[in-house]
Image 1 (cartoon, rainbow, N blue to C red):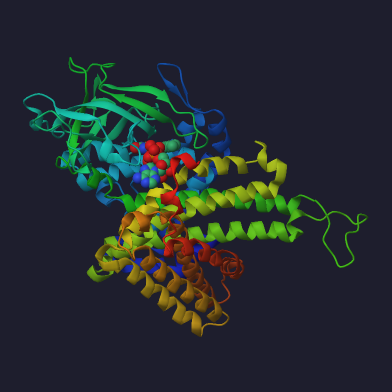
Image 2 (cartoon, rainbow, N blue to C red; image 1 turned 180 degrees about the vertical axis):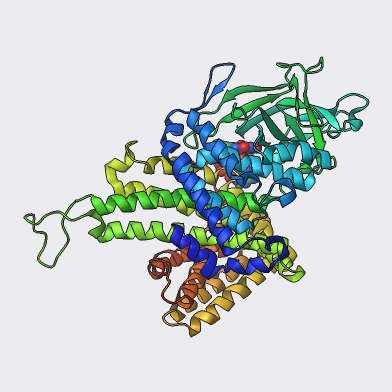
Length: 605
Ligand SMILES: Cc1cc2nc3c(=O)[nH]c(=O)nc-3n(C[C@H](O)[C@H](O)[C@H](O)COP(=O)(O)OP(=O)(O)OC[C@H]3O[C@@H](n4cnc5c(N)ncnc54)[C@H](O)[C@@H]3O)c2cc1C
């Protein structure tokens, strides 16, 4: 994996070119490599050995406290020590000013070693980064800095029992706390009341405090909540109240754990139902959780989604790494397990010794599929992370172009690995046969852990609606046009390269098909007709993007001469032979606005 990652970072994405930018001037290829080495080592020593343990000893709530294995505390202490919580931040807040692409590559080692242990850290740095972008100077100093230092961990509280995909329906209320509510140094002070469901890392004792970032609605003058997302504001709700010096005041805030959710996978990260302001822990003489508003009223969702691109690319990369873990385990197994004999012209000879599984074509097909999914997914994630760097540190034109491309690529960066690297995990189980279905091997856990990724951070279906309903049509299709231009540039290069012209022609045809299907979907301009097949569109779009990236990676492999990423040509060949043709079926229903899904009646099921 490391060899492929290094190839993608250096030979393909040319990360060294970032070193000429002022923000990264103090870095070098050596510092980049040393961050990756350190994270790879900590992940190997402190995370991987305990991945199974944190699955089997899932968090336990005794009515008062949540218990976690000691290994969770130790792994996260090592992560905090590494400084990775603030890896992308400025030096003056204790950060490393690393490019996004290097930070994500480094964090990938933790996802591969134990995605559930890493969950606490990812949420904390996401929470603190959001506060750096939207908080007041004091909110940053108190709440963000303490999280970057690992003193406190953070959460993101969006979902409610009745409001998952549809966040406009959140009903958590935030009411001004006293006449002087606007004059609290930590931010306008409110009392929050409501229930938040599915909150990852919502309760634990790894750190002395937990900083919840909570979406809630401020009632209007009539006491009613404003309908829609415009009514949503964002609040910092610490589990324990703190002062302006970031010291605990000794007051417990009115945030209570109603219970833990017991999940299919990702078990090492606590997942909670939190009751805000029910009066279980009255604070300053009253019920209601004290929260400090971040930004203006009504702008909560916008702030929460400020770093949506990074968060979604991160989810996709996590899915890739779980796919990788399963691929490597099943590959190793297939090399060792003797079973069956080769099919030869003369038939099978039972007197001959058995051969390892890896000698069977069908096993190789499944390994090839996994390899193409996980290496392709890694390329996609790193490409998008590199675009984030362009957006933040490129010149104005490059930054604008990166933003437009990220608009259309982010739903793919999140969804494609979530679907296909999960499929890789399923194939890994298949390679191991019955053994893969037991807890004696890791592959079943990887599949269970990965199954979450199609559900959170915007479900698969919601990503599909976002892509076809918004992203490809916004700004008169600017994102799609830009993507098409980049794909065409790769095809032109492929036409001149050895042995790649045929793939280039196949990709050009796929691109035309995708364009025609996009037009077909919107031919009547009726959203209901266009969007009924948004998910097959998302699948086809993702496969076209991956085919493009594979071709581009193939060109880089040719350019870099002897230093080829191992087996790249075989993954490239696999993708064009077995995967890209699948788009025909997906796009056919999109282009003709197949009516079955929307005409289907409840009573017909
Ligand atoms: C393990 C885990 C961890 C999580 N961590 C967090 C967290 O830390 N913070 C947080 O705030 N949330 C968290 N979530 C919540 C997660 O984001 C939601 O589960 C997700 O947004 C989906 O909401 P829901 O579960 O209510 O499903 P629903 O929204 O009810 O969706 C159910 C199904 O219906 C589909 N659907 C819904 N609406 C539409 C529509 N309009 N058109 C077509 N199809 C639709 C969906 O695609 C999905 O397939 C977590 C969830 C899990 C399982």
